Amino acid sequence: MSTSASRLDRWLLHSLRKMLGSAPLDLVLYDREEVADMRRSVATIRFADRQTLIDVLRSPEMGFGDAFSEGRIVIDGDLVAALVAIYETRRNTPPGLLARWLLWTQQNTLTGSRKHVHHHYDLGNDFYNLWLDSEMQYTCAYFPNPDANLDTAQLAKLDHVCRKIWLRPGETVVEAGCGWGGLALHMARNYGVNVKAYNISQEQIAFARERAKREGLSNQVEFIEDDYRNIRGQFDAFISVGMLEHVGIERYRELGNVVRRAIGDTGRGLLHFIGRNFDRPLSTWIKRRVFPGGHPPALRSVMDIFEPQDYSVLDVENIRLHYARTLEHWLERFENSYDQVRDTYGANFARMWRLYLAGSAAAFRVGTLQLFQVVFAGSQCKTIPWNRAYLYEDAEPRQSDEPWIRAIS
Image 1 (cartoon, rainbow, N blue to C red):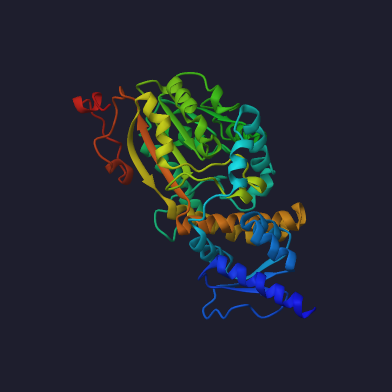
Image 2: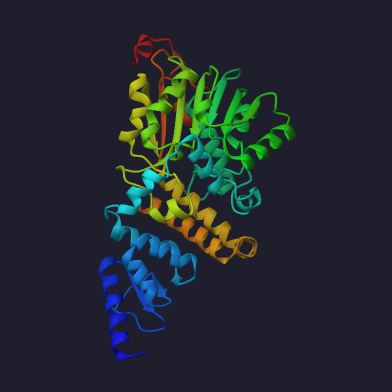
């Protein structure tokens, strides 16, 4: 290689180093020495060629994500720790033009939502079964203690959700976005409620229906392949776990209308969703390659669901660190099945999902992503518990007909 080319390469590396600030990472082009002396590096990032460096400098998120997926970027060391270092350095970087363009082009219309859900969730149940828990829960678990295993934590999450909305036998529940049906079946089996669960993923609905039939719960749980906007009927409770991220903030008032149609003034509900401390678009690479149409909202935006309906917010819990731990479990299981994923779906797909899971774990560790659970109720809901003791004790939630409950709005 000529001297001028070597000088150019070093200049590109130096520019990238400036972009990363004090992140404890070694940057290497080909097999050369790193451009700057980092004394305590958590990982080494290797760039295959000059064009890869240019791609990353020109479009950091898309350039890095695509190059990693294609094997043109290799990270030696702890992948999650490396991404944590990058996110901490660039957490306040404003979104670019492409991020804003994707918000416009990936609208969650009835047609758009089906397309987006198919892209992400209809990859085949066998793929997700490789690294999810036995309940096939693709949402944040709830760890009773940091050392709990994933299956225990996911069951605890299902119970935590049910206890938060104090389900009682004989009640009716509608679930918007039911995944593979684990929560709906848990509610029916353990709380004696009747559930209608909506989902537009064909593979997930087929799996859930078969499981309900196998467990003898088809008379209590109806899995409906349809969009949440088409929910019909009257229910005691509305639940959505991991679906709000697919709605889009411009449609929150419409979602509020759907909720009111379902539970009126007397019902209550829970939303469990990935969010942010302030509104900004999701990673452009994730939206283009993995999770089209996704948007993690700030709590301020979510109030557009509740305020026009005069719904009272009763409880807000942020379990961000639980999602970081969940993703660490998923990533470990994914790595254990990596060769099978690569052989079935291809090396680029396997590397893409490795980066997606590791990057998500890093985002929840750093706090650029949050995980909110919001409990709400209508102004005429008469069964609001007196305190939160029922969440953490083996006791039925207390009910009250005190005047303050009737006047909660």
